[in-house]
Image (cartoon, rainbow, N blue to C red):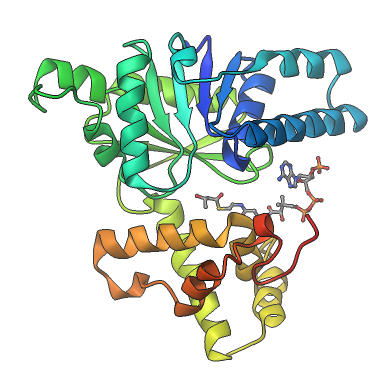
Length: 302
Ligand code: 3HC
């Protein structure tokens, strides 16, 4: 028997490519009303126009009835603050990879959002246990009942880019996460049309603990002149049937995101195999962030 996720209203914090994609699959497949919040009005309008484009494409390809697209679009509303999301049953945070920022956001979630809501993070590499540690009210013992109840609601729900296309969600339990939170989060991801793989709360989880060293090695190959950019990518596209070579994939993910994940792996393990390549650092210093900034290892006309 499938477990009910019980999510009647979802909040999504962050209207970048991940947050927008999460709002899209939640409204379209899970048919859940979504409140989307971002501190940048520009980001919100960019996110909503991407959603409009994706729905229109599905209709034009005959995969979606126009009325179903209109219903899905109507389910997505914007929220002008975290307070406006107070009645949601689950909130998914999808902001940039910064532990202090995420801890501050989760502290705010715990204070402002209804006490039985699931507090999920889409982090790619940061410890869910560290984020969950931030929600314990000041003065409460970490092992006490209050702390257990609130931190038990924190979970890692890691979607992949582009969210509407990639079939996987990685489910990560913090040390504190309750079984009920895990069960309902899995059921929700499945309702969004995804398959779930679980990972322990290690730096980068399974996905990025394996992917980022691969991308980093590819950048080091380029740095050392082992092969050209095009030949490195061609090797993986044609030799291993990857849809994108590692350098193109790094641009697609965002070089700043790749660097911050790589730094989290390096810091979290002290293992020199995770040391970020100098070229990756320099690219980010130069603000060559990949597709989103118009230039990375390739150039883009966005
Ligand atoms: N949003 C929504 N849909 C998108 C999209 C986007 N940003 N980009 C492409 N698509 C859709 C297209 O609309 C098209 O859909 P259709 O078949 O219904 O028309 C489909 O994807 C295929 O797109 P294209 O034909 O334009 O291009 P490709 O065949 O080259 O596919 C790709 C594009 C799906 C992005 C493919 O290149 C791919 O799978 N790349 C690898 C992506 C990947 O590895 N993602 C994981 C990154 S790691 C991650 O997210 C974890 C994080 O923590 C770092």
